[in-house]
Image (cartoon, rainbow, N blue to C red):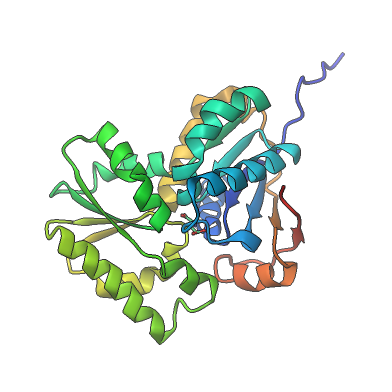
Length: 280
Ligand code: DGL
């Protein structure tokens, strides 16, 4: 007789405050196309980057709980701000009570891991939201792995609104893109590697490339997060078993559905359907 499983396998949850996490989702689906995914964007309450620790934690925990309710055993916080401000507390304090067998992973650690082999000068710059920079999560994670690397950061509060308002390719974007890059490079002239520490920023990449000096590399984290997830599933067969594989992806937003579909087209090359939900 076929034994029934003690759990119901489910999709992998991918969460972001808005659309930015779609840059991570695309890379994950390229690397792991056979798995099923649920993407959840808290578009009604974006941006998170300027919010307090308490609020980002509260909103992120609501999203994680919702993805668990929807059947996910593994959730990726495809948002640097949520990874910086909420991940550790959720892992340490909440998961043991909610369900010790479920997992929540972030995007900062996999990005920090790749930095060591990218920089020659050992001087790295982080471009991120005010919240991520203030949390010091990047220097902390990088120094756990590479003590010798000097990390400087610059908050780019105008970049997420440029993306969310479909102005990434507009002329007005140039001023703010150049401004934050120049500010960061002025802090440390030896920087040879710039990390895009916000999942929205890869959308600005063509313009970012225009304003960085020759020889400076730009790291967009999607592919590193995808490789790290692949490796995680390989090292954790007990979690891998709990992930369904039909190659499907469902989308949920806390904002209006038509708005999500219109803006998501910037990030995805496919027609999608999306359902609105509320988080509480
Ligand atoms: N995409 C989020 C991140 O990676 C930031 C967007 C926001 O401020 O909500 O940090």
